[in-house]
Image (cartoon, rainbow, N blue to C red; front, top):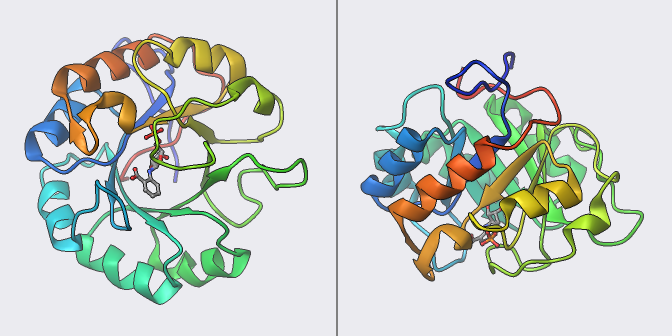
Length: 223
Ligand SMILES: O=C(O)c1ccccc1N[C@@H]1O[C@H](COP(=O)(O)O)[C@@H](O)[C@H]1O
């Protein structure tokens, strides 16, 4: 993986992922707004879709936007099968997946994302510690839309890491100022009801996040 995320003006920008997409119009809105990555939830959630549906949605996504399948607690074999069926370019594992799970998925050749709550002081928040390519530092309940103490992790995560949990268009600037992440990831904050995305909120979130200064080199998309 090489390259850097750039805005239309050529300036480096905050990396933005919009997660939990289920409808083509919301995928289109996220892509048109300039999202760097979009996520499909393939695990237990109100946003869950089938791998076949994810493939259908991903097929309309241009190669510069990273397509991500989100899992939580599935075995590496289950993750592998669903990822291949979905045809996405990245896997996001939530929860307490051991290092071995990431090692087992290396040969898939996709971007590996380790996601979990900041948790205890001894939680390893170095991106790459489990051979992952990207780290997400999230709320205790992923996908809940609950804001948490973003400032508590400031200075702890290292490398390419995204802040998630309770972000929305109106608070993303405050959250980024508090935690200083490399990127941001949102689901509930661009919805009008649980699992129901809103195109205007998607556009507002991407615009608000991309207006913020990037704090680290970017990650390329599907290249
Ligand atoms: O979105 C879900 O339902 C979900 C389910 C299981 C694991 C992860 C999930 N989503 C992740 O949660 C954050 C977004 O949180 P929020 O809704 O914006 O507060 C993001 O990392 C999603 O990928």
